[in-house]
Each structure stands twice: as structure tokens, then as C-alpha cells.
Length: 88
Image (cartoon, rainbow, N blue to C red; front, side, top):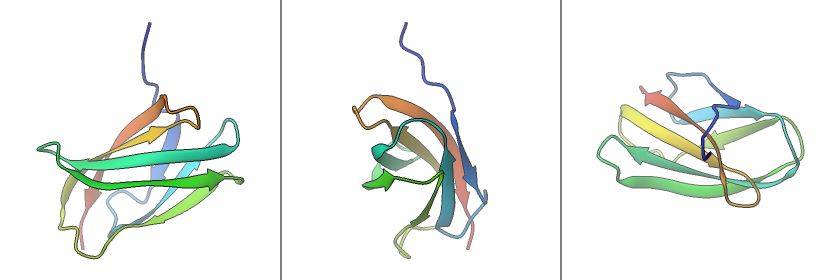
């Protein structure tokens, strides 16, 4: 069975392109992808999880809207996903 559990927090939501990801689980390098509602990829990056909270700062050029953030485990498998609103 291949399911994705929303096993992390994303706040604030809505945000202005600066937000926090809080997750439990193994340490290592996690990656994330942000897409718009049409499926266009706007961001793909990674961070080393050594604490429970990671602050993400997106490019100032990303317009207001609804986006999907998918978080991937260090082994590349999906960890979870959240919808996110950017409102500047």
C-alpha cells in the first residue's frame, strides 16, 4: 500500500512566502517541491533536518495564490503534502 500521510506542520498558512515546516522523524536531508494549481513546479529544494523546525523563504517573485507543497524523506519517498496560500 502506497499512501502519503500529512505528517508535518506548515505555518503560518496563509503566508507571504516565508513559512516554517515542523516535522518529526529521522534526521537527514529532506527535499520539498512546490507547485501551483496547474501543476507547474515553482520551487524544488532540500534542507538538512537536524532540529524539528525549518524556515523556508521562497523567491519574492512567486505571486499570490494556492500552492501544493510535497515533502520527501531522505530516501526520496514522499513524506506528506499540504496546500498553502501565499498572500502578500
